[in-house]
Every structure is written in C-alpha cells, then in structure tokens.
Amino acid sequence: MTVGTFDRLDLRHDFPGLLDGNGVDWHYLDSAATAQKPQAVIDAIARAYGVDYATVHRGVYERSANMTLAYEAARRTVAHFIGAASDSEIVYVRGATEGINLVAQCWAGEQLKAGDRILLSMLEHHSNIVPWQMVAEKAGAQVDVVPLTADGKIDLDAMAAMITPQHKMVALAHVSNVLGSVLDVRRAADIAHSAGAKILIDGCQAVPRLAVDVQGLDCDFYVFSAHKLYGPTGIGVLWARQELLDAMPPYQGGGSMIDKVTFERTTYAPAPTRFEAGTPHIVGVVGLSAAIDYVQAIGLDAVHAHECALAGKARSALEKLNSVRVFGPEDSAGILSFEVEGVHPHDVGTILDETGVAIRAGHHCAQPLMRHLGVEATARASFGLYSDEGDVDALVKGIERVRKIFG
Image (cartoon, rainbow, N blue to C red):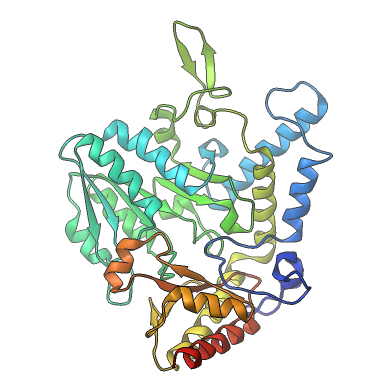
C-alpha cells in the first residue's frame, strides 16, 4: 500500500477489479453504487470461507470458537470505527436498507400514533423514504419534507422552522448519493432533539470518506453498508443508543435471538443478539472488519481530501464544456452528478463505457430529488480512494466525445 501526499493517494494496485479482462486499466467511477475491493479484503474473505470457516456461537469445537472470536472482534472494530459507546450498540444487518426498516418497524412502529409526523429531506435515497411511508401509513402519521438550499444541501434553517413536537422521527442522509452534499449532522440532531424527536442518519456515503463519531454527532440511530466501504455485499451495520435498542422488540424471530423457547412463551436475548435472528453472514462480517482495517490504515482525512480534489478537478473541467450542467455544491464529497444537454444519461453512460469509463446513469433511487432538479435522470461520476487524475481525464475526454457524437 502506497500513500502519497495529503490530497493524492496511489492505491490502484491494491484493487484487482480496476483492470478489465485484458489487464488494461478500467476507469471505475461508480463507487457510490458499490466500491471495488482491495486484495486485503478479498484475501480475508477467501480465508474465512476456506481454512477458517465454521459457524459461530453454536460450536464447541476449536475452529467454531475461533470464528466466534473473530466475529465478535469485528463488532468491537465497528464500534471503535464509528465511536460507539459499546459494541453491544452494534447490530449486524444485511445493509443500510434493512437497518432503516428495522428502526422503522421496531422503533417507529411501536411509538407512532395518528397525528404524529416524520421529517425527511428532498435528497433522500428511496431506502430512507419508503420504510417511513409504510410505517406512517400504518400508524396514521404524516411525512414532511425539508427543502434544499440553492446549492443542493439540506436546508437546516428551514428544518428548524418546520419541526414541531408532533415530529417523532427525523431521518436524513449524512452525504447525498446524488449530489455529494454533506450534512451538518450535529446541528440537525440539535434541531431534532429540541422538538423531542429522534434522528436517524443514513451514513452509506459518509463512512467511506468521513471520520464518523456517533456520540459526537449526537444522533440516535446510524446505518451504513459494507459494500460501499470496500467490503462485501450483504452485510451492514445499525448503530443505536443502548437504551433505544433495549426498549425495541425483535425484528425477526428464529434461532440465536432467543433466551428461552417453549410453546407457551418465548423470551428474547438482549440487544444486539435480539435483532440478529438466524445464521449470520459470518464471512461478510470478517470482510467488513478487514475493510475497516484497510481504510483506517490510510486515514479517512487523506481519503476525503483525495476524493474532494478529484471531484473538484472534474467539476471544473465539466463546467467549462458547453451544454454540460453540473448539479450540487462546490464542496461535494467525491460525488458529481451532471447532464449533457440533449443527451439521455443512459446514452452518456453507454458511450463512456465504450471508452473504458464506468459511471452511473439514472435516477439513483432518488426520484423525488430528480423531480426537484427538473430532470428524469442524471449521469453520476463517483470517486473512491483508488481513483486518480487519469480517471478524471478519461471522464472529460469521454464527455467531449459524447458532445461530438450528439453535436
């Protein structure tokens, strides 16, 4: 692993997925959808599925005991990574989507009543909209939406003016998956708590690039997925304050989450075990831990500076091109959405792919935000710690080709 200057990293060689099938560099600019995996994570997963593999929590044989130790050590790694007060505040879930649904069903579903309100923002991912709509409909509650500032950030002044004692839950993205806008979480939490509401933060796009301290941020729930953090798919994390977890009922029933089962009555294990029914994604947890070790060895401050420098370079170059419109704030966190006038984003993506550049094109699971921006879809380039200036140059060259084809 080679780390360069503060705003420049040289890590491509750690990621075998950044080569195409012919051993040629691939300009992967879709890290906001899912990040490529470093060899260290791939090796950890392969070992966990190979010579180390066994189930956890149930076996009395040595390998099972060792895997259980690794599985629970990973929980401590996660707790330290996000500044949790205790590893018992860390719940393993399949991803951020499941974490949000868990809170929606097991906290909001128990607390909400007719007339209560939930506060979201205009830039939320569908996974931080639909679960709240589902639980609100069932309870007879209402969903309100915080608008955005002119440059595409959640308008916290408007939030402060909107929030009422009827708002029981606020759910916001730490970093927008479309615009790269970074939320002042601490101020948002202060506003929520001033009205007596709880606040959940979707950290999917934040944890790969920002140092997160859930206690310092003063939020109540925080969720993220491993696959955007250079780890495997199918595993994620829900963090919640211990007293909230302790008061919440189970999300699913099955093995592991019980204390005692009879046909007359079942009692449940304490948190976090209460929320982890069934055989867990053992190897996914090992991969998550390896991914955290990888990014911490580099340093998230260096990652953030590197990605911001690349996003700034790309923004500056694209804004100089006629017929290209760039969305979001100047200080976006490694994510850049844009449109080429008269060209559908899918066509932009297809032409770029022909030049070895991979971007995302579509509504990015943020249809309300697309309507707010006045478009059906955008093209999105998103950077990772492995991205470099060659990726930016290839992107700009590809957009110039798009303009010539459709000019």
